[in-house]
Length: 439
Image 1 (cartoon, rainbow, N blue to C red):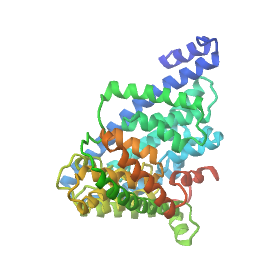
Image 2: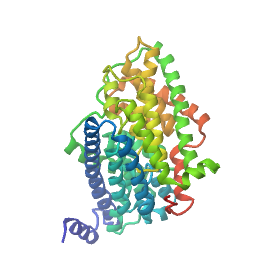
Image 3: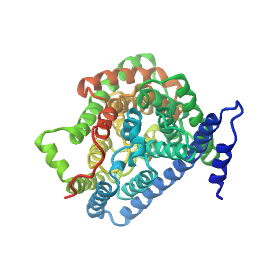
Image 4: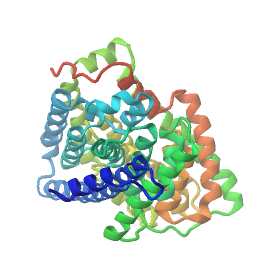
């Protein structure tokens, strides 16, 4: 008998301290699930980082190889996704949202371990091919799938709170940001955030966070940023960053929703040939990557961290180039998240904004650019502010971050009225997940 089977048997046979057998099972399922998803998030982060390094080393030796390799990887990944694991496509957050609204979907392949494993492998494969994807969205779907699997093992009903807790713990483990995990659950995953759900979310976040800390240590994701802005600069720079980011982020969201759901003949023609479209998207990513000196491949983490730390030498074209590479990767339909790439795009645009305000510290302006664009894309201002505050240890920027986020959220609404993840989730609730034509 395995350790997991013994643990399951114990909790199925022994009631909880308060005499509730069901409560003991729920606690066991949540606790073990949080430990497992914490371990998976760490392994996923290691695999993703390794994949990026392998790709960059290969390109260093063969600088024009991406013109062939990247389109082939995009096409192959989308072909595999469409034929064998269609529920693994895209970010992963819309799938969890859809299942939270319709719990019957939690019993479909959408949140199965088979789909979760495919999601991990295919996202890493995209990073091996230079795709501009992140691992945070996939981590949310995988974490929810782990929670669902553990609740089935312990014969505990799966509720919306279980999915919310799994997704929140996934965000917390991916970024090492426990507060952001809770905020993400409130803003994005939960339609009604009840007190008992809050306790479940916090418990899952704490356990997964402890697993991450024990293995990866206490680290600041983007590095500590100590610069701040004076009040005079805040009232000028923050609104501009909010407007700029809101417009660009709204445009990105509108583009993704158009490719995913529009009934315009052009969009229908693209969706009818997903593999061909993915190959073309891969070619765009390859060309942009070569022209940008390779800075747009992968998550963009290293370049973003360099800007946050105030390092010089990042090309002024990084922001627009990363925007194009991320958009091309996202509309391809391949598995992969947009959290980290969106933060990198925002950092690039923040760098452009810093040229307009040369007297203000560049890292602080870059941080506002990240906030404005990320909120423009996700329309989750509280999550954005907490993520950036935790990933840069920039508590002194809390007021400028909130001001930028509020403005960006309002402006993005004017550009794209529907929230991106909510809009994409409709594609999973409207009809069963089925592979379209792969021509």
